[in-house]
Amino acid sequence: MKRNYIYLSVILPLLMAVISCSQKPPKGSPLSLLAEIDKKAEPNTLTSKEKSAGWVLLFDGTTSNGWRGYNMSEFPDCWAIEDGALTMNTTGGGESQDIITTRKYKNFALSLEYKLTKSANSGIIYQIEEDTIYKYPYETGPEFQVIDHEGWPDKLEDWQINGANYAMYPPKAKPYKPVGEWNHAMLIVNGNKVTQILNGEIVVEYEKYSDEWNKLRNSGKWVDYPDWGKFDEGYISLQNHGTKVWYRSIKLKEL
Image 1 (cartoon, one colour):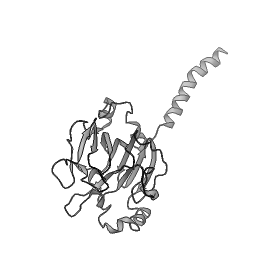
Image 2: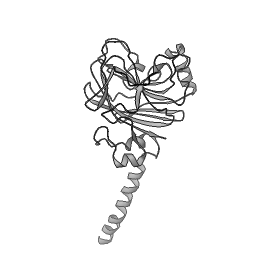
Image 3: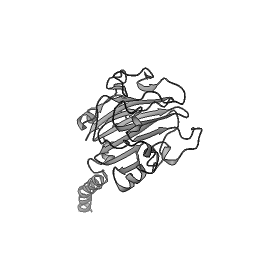
Image 4: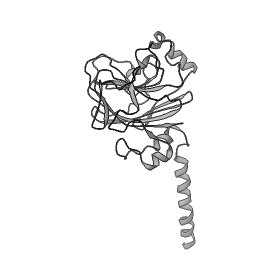
């Protein structure tokens, strides 16, 4: 009996370690990148673990450093910083000036939190080209949809609801939180592979330039936007759709 006890006391921990390691997502995979984010960290801060993994803050919680208006050199006054979050101070249904990062990015993981008001509409747009021939970032860049679709007054397509890749891919899951609660979004662009994660669940995965992507791109809304999806490197934007949304803890890791 004693010999069996010794055997189990040695082998069982090793077996559990092997099982634990086998359950960890592969290094560099979307879920492994998600695991690098410390959900208990104070808003707009980086832990030592996140810093060592290569994450940087794109918003410090108090200033607009690192952001400016699209086709502008300054930060637009239709945006404000409230309680450590970037938000819009415009009202109404028309779009106002979106803000963009001051740098372009190609391969990256973006992590942020957002909170909606009733019937709010916004989005995280990426791979944006800036030029005066374009009025809005969405004319060139894909969008991680941010919206209170449950409170939206009109009927929406499945590719318009929260977590969708707007006008392209509907979300595979619907893990969004109620209006007034913070959601966590992660966007990963690695070559032509794009992954959108909402509150810990993968909601969209696609391969840019694949047959499926080309078919969707050329059969819907983007037919009227010849440069949409054309750029593999670009700015990242937070959209101002004339409704109230808050963004905070904006972190990025270049891949």
